[in-house]
Image 1 (cartoon, rainbow, N blue to C red):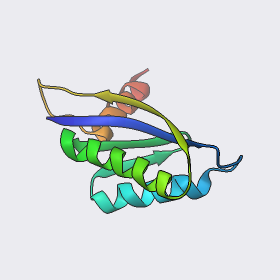
Image 2 (cartoon, helix red, strand yellow; image 1 turned 180 degrees about the horizontal axis):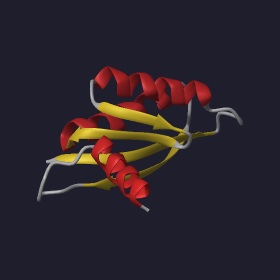
Image 3 (tube, rainbow, N blue to C red; image 1 turned 180 degrees about the vertical axis):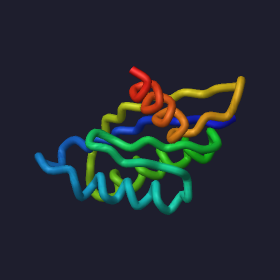
Image 4 (cartoon, rainbow, N blue to C red; image 1 turned 135 degrees about the vertical axis):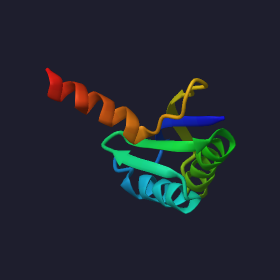
Length: 101
């Protein structure tokens, strides 16, 4: 099953700045080879369910290895069975409608 997720990993107990931890998580996502797009409050990732969930797990493992005693994660996800739709397809659809109005 294909899935598109919006992932936001927030380490707790590491101070105010979390960019070092976010960077480590981004490296894990990039290493997965999955399609992804970072944005200001997280990352969209698309691919096969098991591969996407495995990279979410690797992000947690890596951030814990860096010393974060606790992590809170927000994960939104969507699946479709009627047709294939990529992250870019979703964005393009809205942009096309915006041009029509």
